[in-house]
Length: 208
Image 1 (cartoon, rainbow, N blue to C red):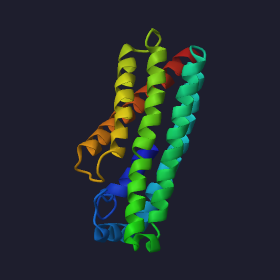
Image 2 (cartoon, rainbow, N blue to C red):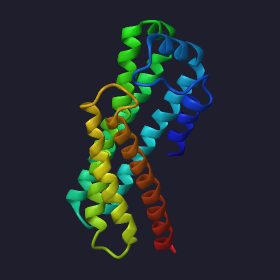
Image 3 (spheres, rainbow, N blue to C red):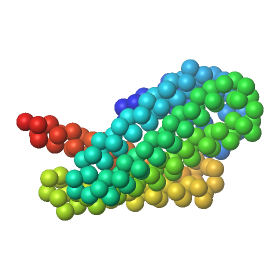
């Protein structure tokens, strides 16, 4: 998550403006990507590393769930790996957009920006919702992990699946479906951080 956050810092805070909206004009797209080549490349780099880290987390989570439920472990691993693959795709999309020849083509730039939002949004949210749901179902009746983590996992799973509504809505950052996408992203981010901290803390306790 730190790696993902580093990418956002380069893409939004260190750039001349925020990363272009879904409904950004051709002029806005060209100006952003031509003026922020280094920042967009850094965004791509850190998000690709975040994809690798997500795949590692999914593998770790699957191993932790396997003793309790092999099926839940498989679902958690599959969801995490699929989410990581689409996060890597969105990172590669950023890197392509950093090419001046691409930024200068209005139709191509717009299409890739939309793809970056979809690959980095619902295409990650829905698979990770599967991971969160498998995790919630496994730990719900166990006393080894705090009860609030189970509830957080279920909320994250529900909102993660809700991000799929972005496929039905307009390409507009002011739409209700985009709001759901952001809400799902925040919930899944919170779940990833919380579950990571709790599981790592429990691992250290078990090793003592």
